[in-house]
Structures are given as structure tokens and as C-alpha cells.
Amino acid sequence: MLFHMKVNFILDLERSLIGSGVYSSATRLADKLIEYGINTDVNGKNHPYDIYHFQTSLPQSLWKAKILKRRKRKYQIVMTGHTTIEDFRDSFIFSNRIDFALIPYLTKFYSYADYLIAVSDYNRDILLRYGYNPSRIQVISNGIDLSINRKDPGLRIKTRDHLGISDEQLLVITVGLCIYRKAPDIFAEVAISSPEHQFFWIGKYLALGTIAHSSFLREKFRAARKTNNLRFTGYVTRLTLEALWNAADVFLYVSREENQGIALLESIAYGKVPVVRDHPVFNWLTSDVNCLKGKTVEDFSKQIHRLASDQGLMKNLQLHGEVILKSHDINASVKKLANLYTEIV
Image 1: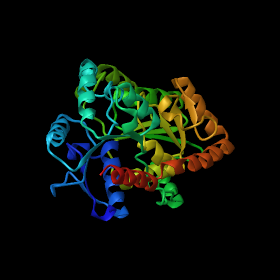
Image 2 (image 1 turned 180 degrees about the vertical axis):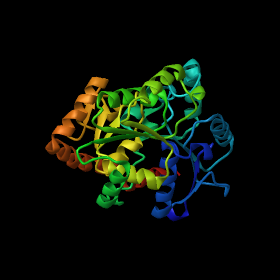
Image 3 (image 1 turned 180 degrees about the horizontal axis):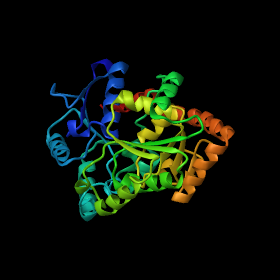
Image 4 (image 1 turned 120 degrees about the vertical axis):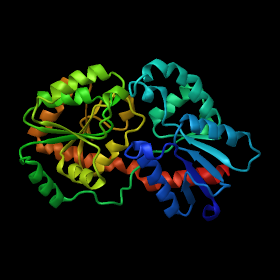
């Protein structure tokens, strides 16, 4: 039955989303579903489909879902519920002024789904608070491909040499949009407090006039420019990102709010030690077992200094991180999705 099933991933504003976690996760899953034997399109036109799987919750997505729901149909509507009020807040200009309107909006949008996918237990808990039927929600991680060997010792040496980073220095990186919710201000303060190490923020740098708390961030960026150990790279190609991931030692994830954090999974696959915010979305990680956690600039700085002075701790956290990552293998996610599609069609 899988080989005759047709699935359409609806990813509105596809071009604008290139470089985002939503785009990367959706296209990666679509490719893997095809390998698994399911005919999967992204924004396909080869109607009809058996499954319409919404990856975005934009106004045009709402309009499409409404039309699909009204029709006499044999197909099913599935939605990935990674858009939440909590995740929207503190992102773009006016997001905090209109977040109250998202409650009825998202409630309406998700009501058109026959089945809802949560990308984490934390994401599921939020969706349940919106009043969605718990029997119609399943947690399926976006996952990453663990069959790929991401570690390249030769590339690490070459990249660090190119960047002028010595063996004694830690390279601390993060990956994400440079917006307030992702906490670039906290990342910068940690860098300023640790001048002996190098810090790279990798991700799109958006015009300050388009993001929330722009005046606050402008002042923080001015202070950050005065330090020699912090770089904001902007958007980089996949090849450059792979080089930087190999060159790095620590993945510092201080984001104020996430529903999963696919970049965190990627970093562990590259063998990086995660230092993360003590937040419920990261409850699948245990501090001092497979990560280090903190809440303040002082906490994060302390954890980085611990890693710099204790290679044994570094290696132990790397080992245990790779073990727990197995629960986020994209092949397991694809099987769960395929089983769900089969059950509901």
C-alpha cells in the first residue's frame, strides 16, 4: 500500500524559508519518505493525494486547509504543530503585539487537521493546552540522518588553521536566525566573558527593523562588535557549515524558546558537546550526563570553562550524547509517519 500512496507536503513561502529549520526538516523528511517507498511531493500539483501534510501555518496554509476540509474527500489532512504562540513570541516585529490573536488563529487552523504531529513531548504539551484532542496527536521527531558520517578530522584541522584557532582554544558555535527569541544577546555576553575562546553565531542576520526588541539588540550588537572573539557569520552554504561544525568543540544553545531544535541534534551528530538552556524542551538531555545546562550568562560561562579545563568531561559528554541521539534517527521518524499515514488513509 505504501508504494501506491501519494503525499503532498504543503510548505508555503518555500523560498523564503530556505535556511530555516522548518524548511530543512520538511524537505529532509520528504526525501526520506520517497526512499521508503512513499510518493511524496513538496507543494505538489499532481492531485489528488491521499495525505495533505501541512508543514506551515501561514494564512495561505489556513486558506488551503479550509478548502480541503470542506470538500467531499477520501484524503486525510495531517499537520505538524511546530508553530505555537510561545515559539512565535519574541521573533519578529509586532509579534508580541499580535500574539494574543494567535490563540484563536492556531486553534482554528489546527482544528482542520485529522491528525496532528508534535515534534517533541514539550511541543505536544503546548498543543494539548490549546485544547486539541490528545488521541489525535502523535509525537514524531523531525529527526536527522544518523547514517551520514559527519566527522572529518582533516577538515577540522584545515578549518581551524584557516580561522587561526589554536588547539588550546575552544570554538563555541550556535546555529539559528539572529532574532531575540534565539538569544544572540546572551550568546554575545557569554563570548565577552570568555575572551580566551572563540564564538561563532551561524545563521541569517535579519534587518533589525524586522525583528522584535530591535533597539535592545542594536545596543547588544554594538557591544559585541568591540570583542575580537565573536563573529556573526550570517547565512552560510552547507559546505561552510559542515566545515565550521567540524572545527567547533561546543554547541552553545541559549535559545529562550524552542519546540525541538533540529540544530542541536545536528551538533551532537558532529560530536559537539551541547551546553543548553535549562528548559523543558531539552528534558530528553540530562545535565552532566550527555550535556551541560544553565540559565544565566554566568552559568553558561562556567560550563564552558569546565569543558576547557577537563578533557575527560568533554569526551564523556560526547560519548553519551551520541548514544541518546539514536532516538532521533530520521529513519525511525519516517517509519512512524508511514505507519500513521497507513492507519488513517
